[in-house]
Structures are given as structure tokens and as C-alpha cells.
Length: 428
Image 1 (cartoon, helix red, strand yellow):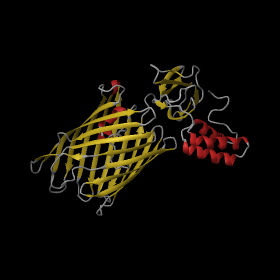
Image 2: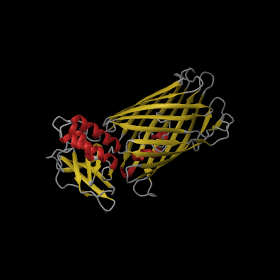
Image 3: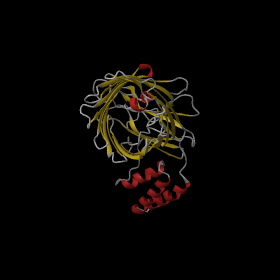
Image 4: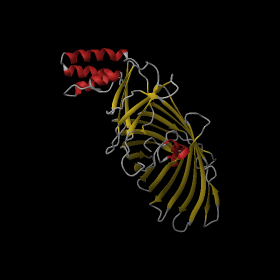
């Protein structure tokens, strides 16, 4: 909702049953989510509950319930119960194309004197993702909602087909923390109420801050025959839980809508937290790649191994033979302009145990327009002019925000003992 519903190509959490069930195939751990909403000045209230579980062979199953309550209709409500299945498709190598299917049962109480309605429906979704060498990523999704859905009204005996909606979606990630997305839902019906408004527009943008913990987003959607609506959203992500909020305006006195949701990501096993590396950060420099990561609070590991593979290699290999005791390392000797795929693996009880997702980094020299400020900052630092050095370093950071040497200089300037990202005695 914070992205105004532009989520068909992005669905990669447990709400995928609503937006695009193919997104379940991107999830690695069981997830549980509960969401509540108040829409149109509290005329409608919504409760959504979902749980997904990944099975062997990349098969993903999910169950969800979606309940809508109409506060101005005594006893009026609409319920949907959904079972979802998602798998990767081998038509495209590298787990880049996914298929998902929803099977839904519908039940509605129409209020005093109007009886009830029930029905069943099927949705099908596709999701394609294409990462690139520079850490950008393109995604495309296609969702067909209500392919064969019909509703039976018990009081009149009428059987009514629900119009199908075809929603293509596009998304572009400028980096792992910044994206824009677009959906174009098209109602496949000639409904006099819609007129020529069968096609809608949903668009949004998102940015994550503080190492991926805080997300902010905004969106715009055309709303059938009414004026368009704007939306805002925010999220907080911890290692095993999340909290999300969204707000949307509406035209013609319909008021505002709010949604609040919470999610929990299960850690399999006996209850002890797994030391799975996450929150990976990377900076690059001239033939250098710097990596840092965290593990969930309360978990422990003997150490860590870093594996990497360039586009010129056939297989992954250890970047360092020795076990790392720190949650950071600096890899030297990488080739500039070459894409490196990297992952970190925890070692527990002497055995390699848990791995983070693959990370992509492309080493390169510092940008020329940032180099001037960096050298000014370095010279001021050597002269112990810390304020001037910090000013120049931040100017360089604005021009080249992912450079290791600039980040290392700033770290030295901001710590009283002048320790960089990798101390002199630290792992190189």
C-alpha cells in the first residue's frame, strides 16, 4: 500500500498470495504475517493473516485468510481463504523465473435481508528477475486474478462471474536499497460502471536506510473513476521480525486509509538462534572489495569463511584459507570492472553451517570528481585538521558513496582512536 499497490514484480514476502504468488519461491525461511487496516474513514476494516513454508526441491506452500468488515452494514463482511503454491521454472536457468498459483474460497455476508454469497477462484502469477553486474536488477511480473471465479448468491440463486484482472508489473532496482515499480491492472470486462477506466496505474518508489533496517516509500494510483490517490509507507526490519505501516488518501470525501502489519521469520531448529550472516555491506575500491556482516543477536559461530566467484571463474572458491574471527574482511587483488559474486558462510562446531544470500560487487578506482576531495581530506588528516578533513571526506562520499577508501577515511576521522574499517592488525 505504501507503494500504492505497485507490487506485482516485487512480491517477495508472505503477502505474495495477494499480489503475486510466484514471489513465494524467493523466500528461504518460514514466515508468518498479521495485518490490520482501516479504510475510507473506517468504513471498511481489514484483517489479513498468512503463513508460508518452503519445502524441499524449492516447492513453497502458503495459507492465508483475508477478512473485510463493513462497519456501516450490520453483520456485513467478506472472507477469502487462500492456499498458494510456488515453484521456480527451469525454462530460465539460475532461478530467475517463478510460477505461483492461488486457490481461493470466497464467502460473504451481505447484511440483513440480503443473505450470503460464496464462490471459488484461481489466480496465476509469473515473476522474472534479472540481476546485472553493477548491482542493479530488473524485474517483471504478470498476475492473472480471478481466472475462473464465480459467486453464488444463496437468496436469489444467481451465479455471477467475477471479472478477471490482468496485471503486468515492472520494477527496477538501482541498488539493493533503492527501487521504483509500476503496475498496470487491466479489468477484462465491459462494465458500464467502469466506462473507459478498465486500465489503472499504480506506481511507487522505495529507499532503505541504516543498513537496510528502515525503509521509506511513496506511491500514486489512479482509482477507477475517481481522482488519483497518494500513499506513504515505512518499515522497520530486524533479523527475525518486521513492522510496516502505510497511509493512503482518497478523493470525494472517502477519507484516508491506514494499514499496520507485523511479520515474524522463523528460525528452524531447537530454538537457538542460527548464526546465519545477514545485513551484508560492501564497499569497493581500486582492486579491493570490503565486506562486513552481522549475525542474529544471541547466536554464536566459530568463525566465517568467504567464498567468491568472478564472471571469469567456473566455481566458487575460498577468498581466504584461514577462518575469519571477525565479521568483516578486505579482499585485495580483485580485478577492476569484473563482477564478483560473494557469500559468507558461518562455521559452527568445526563445520560449515549457514550461508548468507549471494552478494555482487564490482571493484573499480575512485571516481575522479571525488578523488580531489579525498586527497584534500587525507592531507588535512595528516596535518591533524580533523574538521577540515571530515568536511572534504564527506564531499568525496557524496560523489562516490560506495568507495572503500573514502568510507575508511571517514571511519578514522569519526573514531577517537582513528581506527579504520579494517584495523592494521585486522584480516586483509
